[in-house]
Length: 547
Image 1 (tube, rainbow, N blue to C red):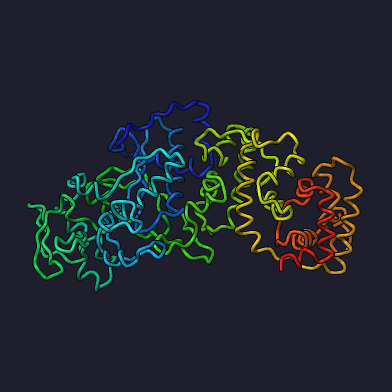
Image 2: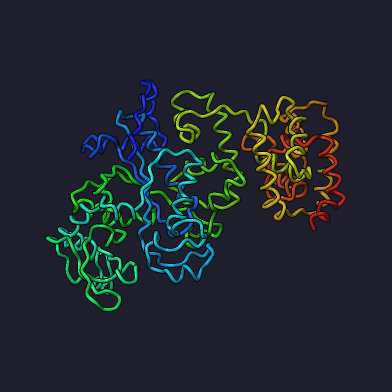
């Protein structure tokens, strides 16, 4: 492994970190407490993440590394111990089914149950399918600038790095079986073994019972696919462990101090811990996060290819917005689909903008601190992503230059050179609008009452003085909304504006169910342009144009 990092920590920062209620600091303190009771095996703290390269990496894979890194950086503030992050790929697993989202399905079908690093690459680019998926993962992690070391199960098994733990598994075979067998059904128990030999004839990973486990020789005997008894050493990549024993054995072999995993693993935690202890190791600190769901509320699967891919998110939003999505409520199940992107973008920039105004303790709770590992950049965002999306919708802009004409009228001192974040978001907004907003737009005709209110709004906007601020415009919009039928009675007895008024504006003028703060939108798009938009809506042009 590479040399561990050795951060220097400011005492005031450490004191604040020890009190912070942000979840990465809470988890870091749990880890520190565990380490203080039982020293780590190393002169550093080993964080690990696991990846099953049975399919192309998805955003959930990234999330595990991002969140682990957030806890790692938090730990470095409260402890002087250096740290390492090991990203471990289970690429020696047999390919149990063909993923739906890759080419050359027949080629993969012919290689079922062979180790992923033996299965040919269906893309024709790498040594194997496992190597291809590993490369995709590393490319993405490198893009985000993660500090990590990559580890391949194939390399660890074949090079001898796991030989000691495999020989120990031979010696303590019955202890491992005693942990595993009560968790299995009767039929599975009859044929189960924690060892999975690689057939010397077919090259497939075999799920067969062991006829003999010889601890003295370090060998296992089993019936090969043709019925012939075969004896193989457990070392040198001839045999691998079943995935649950492999989990605990890896912890014991490497001395892992921290690992997080999804809720689908939660019931297996006692098994992983028990096997780790049976092999002479100490179970690490765990963190269980909720699963990501696709647009239908189903679990994201690498083999199905549902949900978002890494590259798809980055087509429509900056990398930091994805980290923002990962930071928020990791123990709450969240849909991960295209419609979550705009909110993640705007939340990121809102927190980034607030960071410079905050006191130290509040900064440590700010997602921007964790996304940027304690050193967030300064970014002035005069317009939000949501506003840019709505501007793209009504301005018929097909290039960033078209959007910039409106942006600079709204904020004259803002240019692509002085505000590169705005320029980047303008490009993202155009792509997102074209692919997702435009196809979903549904304008509707105004009712008689709504038409009257919209004419009132147009007349009110016409009376505003030149240079009115977004807040001035918003106040004028509220004044119109305080007329029937949009009034509501507030708890303090005052007259307020119902959501129906703003829904009317969004549905009739923007063709959407929800939208931005309308005063800011008018200021960006222009008062005259908004009045012309109202005229087009009342004439039915927007409905006809969308048909």
